[in-house]
Amino acid sequence: MRRYGKHTDEDDIRSRPNRKGNRPRTNIRPKHEDAAEGMVLTVDRGRLTCLVEDRTVLAMKARELGRKAAVVGDRVALVGDLSGKKDTLARIVRIEERTSVLRRTADDDDPYERVVVANADQLAIVTALADPEPRPRLIDRCLVAAYDGGLEPLLVLTKSDLASPDKLLELYGDLDIPYVVTSREELETGDAADRVRAHLDGKITAFVGHSGVGKTTLVNALVPEERRRVTGHVNAVTGRGRHTTTSALALPLTGTDGWVVDTPGVRSFGLAHIDPSRVIHAFPDLEAGTAGCPRACSHDEPDCALDAWVEEGHADPARLYSLRRLLATRERREGD
Image 1 (cartoon, rainbow, N blue to C red):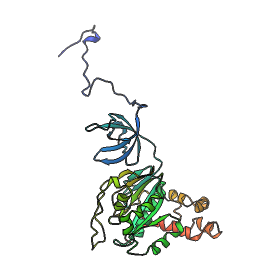
Image 2: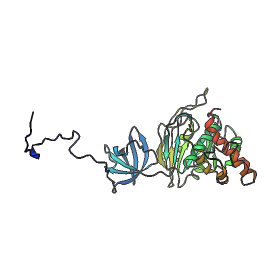
Image 3: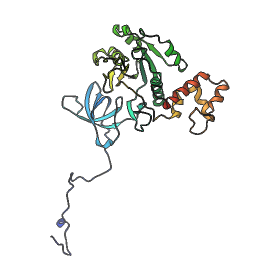
Image 4: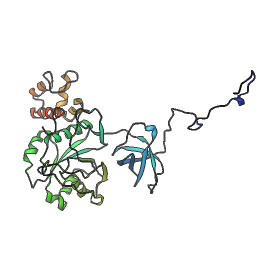
């Protein structure tokens, strides 16, 4: 054991090296002003495929981002090897502020939010008119998630050769939602894709729907050079299809500057994260009437000021009914 006298020299003092390196620790993180801008196209087991200028680059998230995850549609800043060549890997060092977020939870009791896509302008809700039967409660839940996240909804009704769309369209008529009705024959000839494409130009559109409704088939028709596996068999007993899209994927829309985001088929759409005060923003004719509402009003209670607002003639009663029906979807299961 070494002992030191009264006159020790600093050179005699031994210091323990940092096992992880001799550089001093710091909380200061680099700003990466020279980082390249990119867009996340898909995420697979911690690896993110990003579009940087005109090439795809494989990247991983930097440790300094902590638990913050990047999702499809995110605008990100990347450093490292951005050549896009085989066996190269870049690093995402920053996730830019999002303009919109489509979120869902596994069910209404699950507090964990799952971000499906970021920065989308529009949510295309694809549902079949038959085989499988339409599920209005699921459509309602998707609409609430769209309004809450800042996305404009679009209804895409498929298989009109099997059933009339009139009843379903009447249910959503007071919401003034744009819609497209297609048949199976139109999907095969490309006519359906042409009519849907007219609503997608210049926008990032996320497609959502439960399995078997023709969502991926429609995406394949919209983006033929990026063919996805055609949707699988629809179970004759349950009326549910087999999942053919396993992860969200952003695809450039042929012939326009728009984007299509194909998402996995959903069996449920939890709304545990929904705040009624955000959904009301999608109803500008009713929003002004909430000024007299009590604090944290659910807009479906005896003291809600919207009742008097509608009675005074400021808005159509059907609009208030539609709002309350959508907000009530949190208390109803999709199959109810």
